Image 1: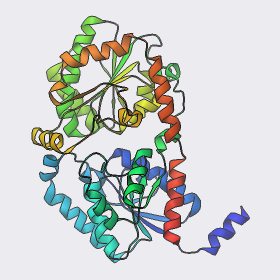
Image 2 (image 1 turned 120 degrees about the horizontal axis):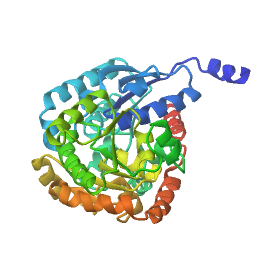
Image 3 (image 1 turned 90 degrees about the horizontal axis):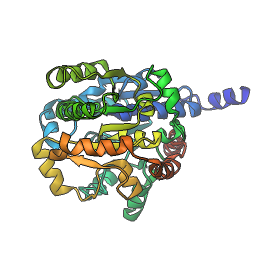
Image 4 (image 1 turned 45 degrees about the vertical axis):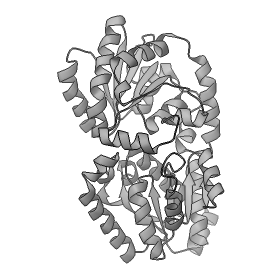
Length: 389
């Protein structure tokens, strides 16, 4: 204890860390990073834009994280004036109140330009979570090089891409792989959520953004109605990130499937996934959580029509979901755009609910071991070294 106090006294300067996150997955990464960095510098201060988990750790958020929670090319255009105002405000704030380092967590279209402007002011900058430059708009690598002193990547194949282009990158792994146990206890999760031990349970997970729910809740519910007709004992649970999203889901349900019984679970997503036999889910970080919890899933996504055509033209990937990208094979089915309908969803869910899925677990374990790297501690160490450089 005395040694620790001496180390703190040797460096009386309290590091100031600027951070901007744009959604709930970034908030989780940010909270893990803050916790790990405080072990190195207990008096460090954190300011920028953060979510509820970061705020609970004393983060000073200058804007609501919801300001940045928008996805899709066309969708961003509808909010462009507000986003430009927020970014200009952040540039002005950090220019006037220079942090020791600025870290943009995900949200690359917002953060990379912010990082480039701050780097030009002599501020050290880091992008935590690589943009998908290996998937589309590969020339963004040059902007990343201009904007950052380092990229912290979550996925191993990203590091290889950056090394090929000579851009500094540290693979830190994914904090979800550190936090989620190698075996997720289904019985314990069901007991915690007051769910029956032996029933089949399907989780409906149409996303964490309002725009995602608007597109996915209806086909999810239409599929659930058909599945309920085939198995009257099937239980449907709906994990939601917030009361606001839960209300949105229930409003749509009132129009689409008012008589379908569902159990709403707010704020307990990982427990809900662990309690389930299968997940019907939107694409995103939640699919990686599902793979680490080791549950079968059917992954879906629907874009605004113009965004879809632009993405189809620009993206050069065989898969769009993280489990398949990490495995470099089709581990789980993906449905995109017009494929997101009951006719396609129901047979895929049935197969995963009622047929043996044990071989899938072996592939999930490989992914889990590859990503389990003590990510928050590695990230904090890399940031500390950059500050001292």
